[in-house]
Length: 129
Image (cartoon, rainbow, N blue to C red; front, side, top):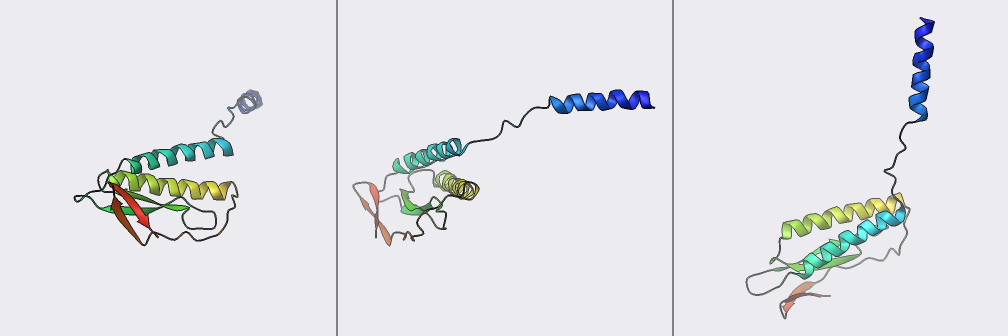
């Protein structure tokens, strides 16, 4: 029995010594850059929207401040795939909230007010504060 246990123990130690390291560690800078790329994609999509008599202007809370609430409000119209945009924004907001918590990010705790209304001017949705 001892003849089997010693080689088996040695093999286990060998596997443990050469096990793969966790390469899924992402740096704060890499995670921040990923958020910036996502933010640009969302803003670009929103900026392709146009307003006219057949579309509706809308807004959505965009970003996640460390103290709570959004960083801003994003305006867009129903001329684009609003389900896709709203899904991307919700995913981004959640990722940014997780980033803030993970890296202990701080910011001012000022409240960002949503637009009172949105007007369509020159085929662009303009927030009114």
